[in-house]
Image 1 (cartoon, rainbow, N blue to C red):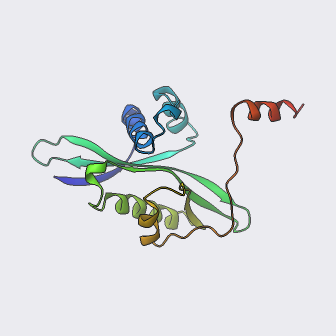
Image 2: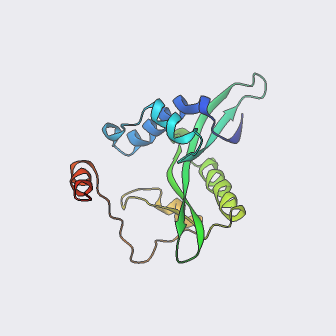
Image 3: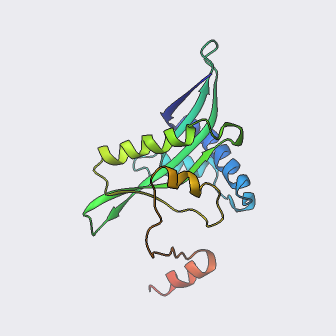
Length: 166
């Protein structure tokens, strides 16, 4: 069997959601996935996509059968200080039984190439402090981003703040 990487297309929305759910399960966060196939179709494959995805598939050369074994879901942000875009990896997932086969490295390397080709200032991602993949990212040459701490607002607090906009 060989591994091929390819950009996801609209017909892959169900596969994307399955891989997103597998990632959430691996992080003991399965109950947090609210996305639907319709959400992914709307936001990833419409006239102005809000995200892109790269699939890693195990391909049987004899039958042509393709089995998804990995995912990199990403989007572009903008660095006002650098005056250039950044490529942000939202989700990176490789099936547990395929870890150590170089699939994650291939996915990140493909996104690094896209970042370089797109004149991005940085390739970025965020990782939980207890995520075992931190050592993997460090082996690739990624470093913790200084003293920056992520902040977020969601749900009722987001609505409450939005209501103050007038």
